[in-house]
Length: 102
Image 1 (cartoon, helix red, strand yellow):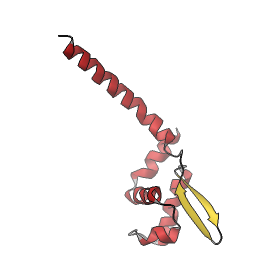
Image 2 (tube, rainbow, N blue to C red):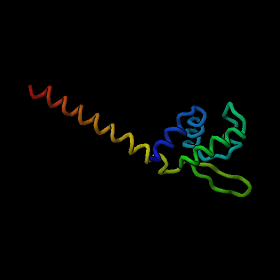
Image 3 (tube, rainbow, N blue to C red):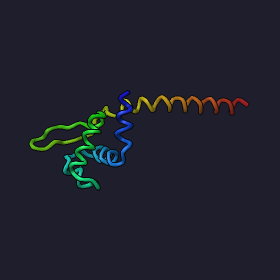
């Protein structure tokens, strides 16, 4: 149930904002903290949660650590949500067929 980690991690608005910032561009903690209302240590803690949920990855670059979105990080969550999307499309298709067959 890896998708539950992603749901939990992204439930926090600050973590979502950090995730969205990383979606736009890989960044260091210092750069991420500039656009946040929380401290640099708090950003680091949020990144640890995102990393534990396998949504972000870190790459050492000299004395810096560059954080970026994992390309496959949302796959478990997408798979979970797709099951509902399929049900919704099937129900919509059935309703269209019902209305057009009359």
